[in-house]
Image (cartoon, rainbow over all chains, first blue to last red; front, side, top):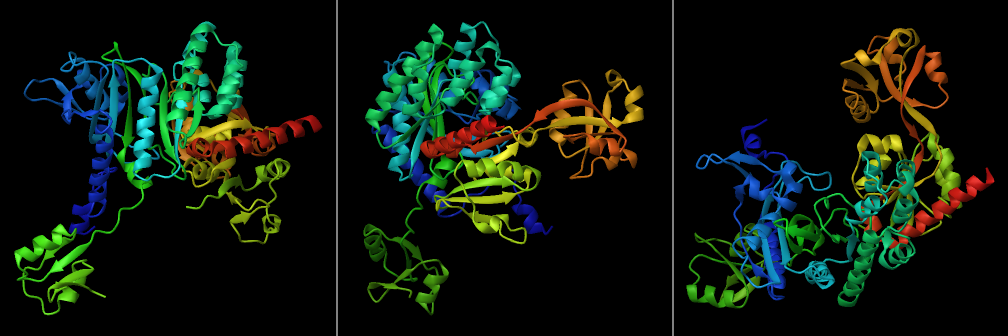
Length: 377
Length: 222
């Protein structure tokens, strides 16, 4: 390997983001945060790294296996680099902002780092942007965060947005109602929607669980199937809540495709109520996810996080920037005037014999000559 | 990317059993699909928005997991080996039935005591499943990955045990091997990409339903 290739190699899952893409990402973050801010969500900014025991507390425990750890030489305590920002925002809400009036609406954007990439998201560092809503366990709060996340994607121009609602508390409630435990085989079968495995390992709950599996799909159809099931009381309450949230989302965002997956559990292990995942047509990865949890183990909270790398892949490409080459010696007044017209100015540092060729070389499609904007073509 | 629905089917043994179900579900590939001389890999069907691709059975799972194909047919041996989180297996098609088993030379099987193992060397096409299976028994499995003719490995001293698919057991017998433990019963499943199921729910649940009816009809006729 050459020396230059050696220097270019980055660790797995990490990459440099180059011109145009980096600008695109910054613009997308700006637009998403503007969208959330305009709807009453106030921005907070937690640190990149903090003590492990606060970072991995409560719902943060889900990211324990994904967290880079270092020892703090100052306090001699273990610190973790955030693998997810939600636990940090929840910490802020229940500590420093414990006295702020509820419902408390917060938003955030930042980079996270993970020990391992997943199959569909090999990136180990990527951007998150999200909202959290504290102090309400109402169906209206569940619907608000799901709708806002989906509408933020639509506002970016992402086509074919869909929300997949899940009920991670349903299967445990159902099994508890029947005095059963979810074994590993059963959990795996449910995760892979493997009808044969669920039928084989579901025991006395197998018929109910198989019916739940069959209900995975479009929201209307799923609610119809779920309504016809004879569920234990706690599970039935979860189901009724789901129907309420579906109605609210459909009323607020009728263009968004809505599906229901009552048995989805992966990534929702620490959720305390309705969860959701955001997808877009023809994109194989998740664009974001969210759901209800207990902030600090006690306060009702729900939120949504968008994964910016997937969002960027789904969002339409930005327009090419209008770069204008200004040959050396162009008066500053001219530069200011053309910038006011929306041009990006690229000044020449030395006199160029052929300004058109120099403009082209510097990736500008226009240049300034004889008191006017000329095309390089 | 266009909006076509892509169905991935496995080459070989399972395809002959799968095609009657595919046809009963109302999908008829173009004539080149049945022409052994055709070099095509992607085939049109009687539905203008549905294409079929024909790939190795292990690759069916990979194409569907990454969303390059939306539906597919794969054995649970393949699904267990990859354990792709993006794959759903909503329907057992009941075809391609066999077992994923541990086998060893018949004379070794007569004296072997598996409780005493701490380490075994195994030739297999399924290193992940094999490692997991033995790890659960507290045994470390060193896997030699082979893509075929596993039955040769013990007689040539490559290893003493193999993990492979067994249907009748006649290949094992012909090579002096004995099936000593069944890891899993295998049948082929209809598999579907998770994101595709979420973003095109009506279309995909419709096809799953048609395959379900095709399977039930085939069962009733049998």
